[in-house]
Image (cartoon, rainbow, N blue to C red; front, side, top):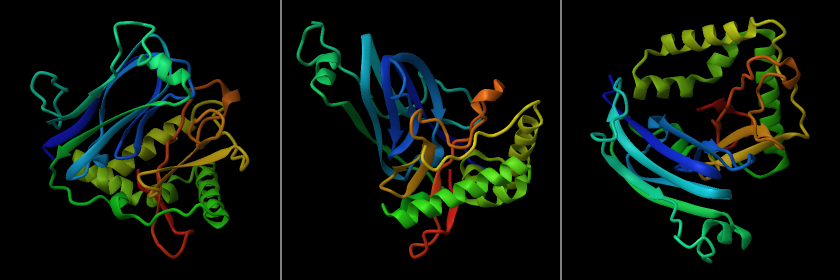
Length: 271
């Protein structure tokens, strides 16, 4: 049974930004106006034993931007405790006192480049090496994109039909890792996800947005070992509730990995 949990404590004010851990997207609000939010996000499944890279990219700011992020180690099953949970790595946006300073966030962004923040955080855990750390790299070629599109379309068809088991099967790596670092048994994770989706699918008028090949963007993460299918314009997950339904606004973020270095059509949901 896992006893420790890693989480990122993030506080954002008046920024449009993305926050990442080891190249994996934790939050991405770069397509929105500058806004504010705070969260303690569990990230154990993205933490490696050794050095971890916590990063942020800011693309727009308002009048009073602030951003800080900390990778902390807490205890599984307990609430985050800022006084007791050790900080493994952190960064904070520096804002000069003079608003017209050439080093102010707005001045840097006006010069045409996003603001990049980064911190290295050393962590140790006993879960071994995650599959995504050494998964085969995705190629930037037409065949790889078509295989990803075919895989995404098949998932869409499966979920649209209500046949949840084939989708759960392709999530084997994801669910196994969740069970390892967060504690629930694998069958319980499958059952919980299946029940949650069936509840959502049972809502009146629920239907998935169609997959339009022209609007799907396959974002690469983690040194090209993980791909995230999103809407090219909005950045929303490609598998999501149709906008016209006016329902729950449900969406299913997917992180896809290759299973075979020599066959780009062998894919799985790994996160």
